[in-house]
Length: 142
Image 1 (cartoon, rainbow, N blue to C red):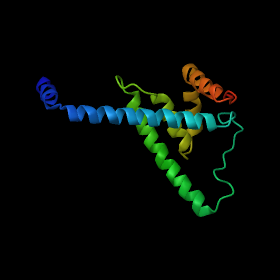
Image 2: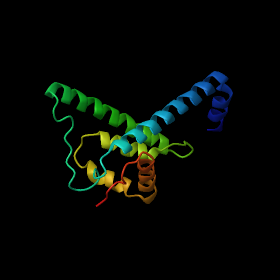
Image 3: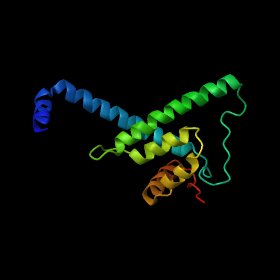
Image 4: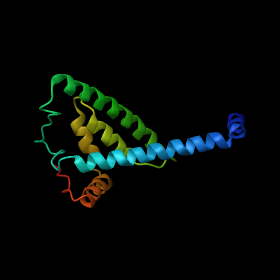
């Protein structure tokens, strides 16, 4: 096991380190930007029980279904990115990125999972602080 680690250490080059750092910075910036955008655009009552979502209600069915498919693909990508950012030693907004991915997905049973994540005191405080910076009301919870 230690030999494998030693081999990896000796195989490191400046080029691979720079590529890794650039990849980290880009994914981190994308994650923060996407989280900020969606949390600010969410209606304040999104997490309440009486909220009903209708995605692109006045669009033709082809546009609506295409957008739903793209939105779900983005949601899966964000969930995997959030899991990666949640690993120990990897700095980033992992839990919020997973929440953002769940918000994007159209799967049954996602509402209780979203509520469990957003009701965590630190997550809710961070989300409401971000919304306050953009002049939006705090999220309403049941």
